[in-house]
Length: 363
Image (cartoon, rainbow, N blue to C red):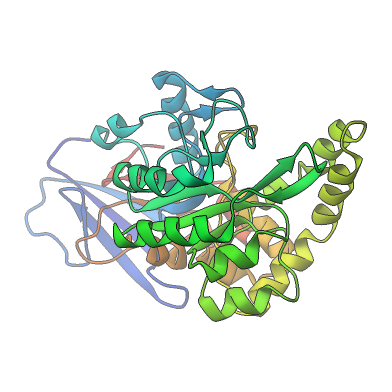
């Protein structure tokens, strides 16, 4: 498409959960609802348009072994893009993917820097592995490197205990989260189990990833503090296989992982019922492939979240939470067009008709 090309999208433009407009234009890469005068070339796309979907937990530049080459990271981003995920919160990566910001055909990436984990308490080659007295310094470093987020590993298997245990003492996370907030960054943490959650939330954390360990005791605390969760249910589906692999060596951990898996839907629904903000994330880029955003929305619906709310968790609500615009006047022309109304059936998300980045049809 030439620089002079104007994109005209018509049908139903879903600017909000209950608000639709008949058409929009993208001129110079930006959305307008005013017909542009004298456009020399106009390309028209018809259907049901959503703002580019959000995957609020993925890892670009990472695979199960650690950092990957730039061409692999590019393929990951393109896979997400073609699935309609045009805004990615990279929840920890050892790779420098800043070069993607110069590409006008790739999703926008919000980075959380590199994971920060306790020594020998996370996946090899993924994280800064440190001790508690180094936590504030590393949070400060990653807050300056990221795009407004820092990622901690809140719990992991303790081989001595044979089960999941918290990684950080309370005073260390209090000081670290305070430092991140001082620098204008929000903090999130990987947490599978129950025991780390109260300390992290009372220390002021902004989000918990996975959150399978939520209980009747901690759900009200999350709701009161407004702490969001990103359940990554497509990843939690792997827990039975993980448990089977660790059964012989760590039977307590294996049993714990199975329990967390078995109650996963009840946990997510109870969180949503309590008013906890819930957002879509896939955990792609570790052991999972990219491009799973539609599957995660469907999982939230299976968990009992109403379809419109599950849709908002990857569209309007998710963009607002991350501070990025949707389909508004002057916003970047990043949108996805479908053949039918995704509010009526979220399974439509699995089959985008057109994917548009910066006003250009890329898929």
